[in-house]
Image (cartoon, rainbow, N blue to C red):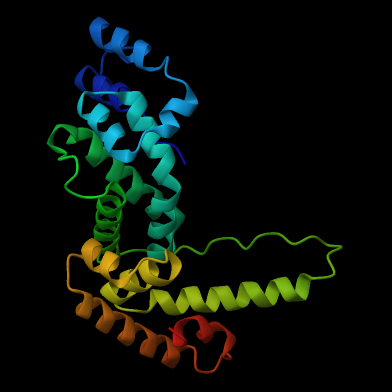
Length: 230
């Protein structure tokens, strides 16, 4: 998925009659100098380094930060919403918020990944509370000559059952479950993202496991194993 160039979007919004509006000359020169950094040098920077540059309108640093985190942000959004279009919108909105409010970012106050998870999950909850039309994703096509089609179908069915069951969980339980089990975050990290206490997260996970056991009771123990042994 792609994130629109922030300056291009802003320039076009400010001057809709001139779609070719560009950065001022001094900023263009600064960005050209910045882009001379090698790929290895960009990769060696931590998120705080990039965020410091972003505060100074460095679009290249913004693109680097997006590339680092966009896939993971999308994965979390998709697991909560189970809708590709909505998940893309949520992640686009999160990064747009970062860019438009970049001067307010306080480096060192919070890990960027924690902030991103928090924004993404909050926006997902907003999406869940809106009236919506369910859209069924197409199943992947299977090779005609595959000898493992039945096994693939069974795994797909198990995955679909689990995904459907997760969608029936209350919002907060769903978010806690996705962050804990699919993202592998600790309860304290989940609590930080959800802005609640560790004990509250533990209670959410306990209730989510109980609800999943009830929903999946008649579909075998394999799906439940990952949720009942922790």
